[in-house]
Image 1 (cartoon, one colour):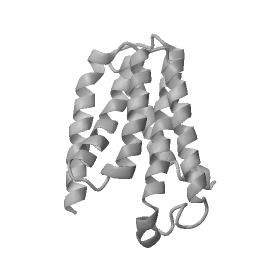
Image 2 (image 1 turned 120 degrees about the vertical axis):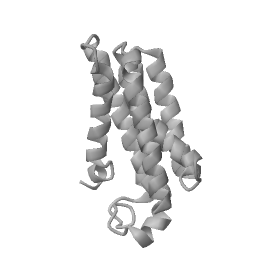
Image 3 (image 1 turned 180 degrees about the vertical axis):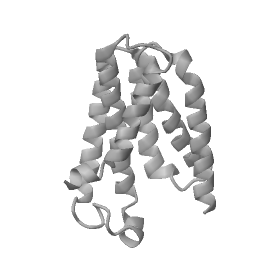
Image 4 (image 1 turned 90 degrees about the vertical axis):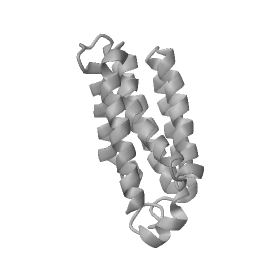
Length: 174
């Protein structure tokens, strides 16, 4: 159960829904198999990002969020790091199965962005906010690419980016 809980399942479900939305907004399903693999890819990469974030936040979480899986001792830091790497690799693997070169590129880029966000940029104003906002908006684009629906999903992706960026600014101000 701890290895499931650390993934933030509700957030992962939301990622899956946004990929589907990006694929299907003003479009029909043209590539069902590609879409399934895109959903799996984005969900695994997001899950890996959450685990990696918890790994790098462990010193802070030992003080502020002792109930989380790592500070509570339910998962070792080494296991969490390995788990995140495996999830990133599975996400990238699933992106290859979409048979869309842009999906593979986005999967690799997003994996690196989430890793570097957790390790270096989380506490950096603006760059950290931009990475989080990009990650939110990119899920729609990922779905759009896998279903040849990029044009239809761009507007909602931009809105998601801007809304998330605003939310990040508000969280920083609080």
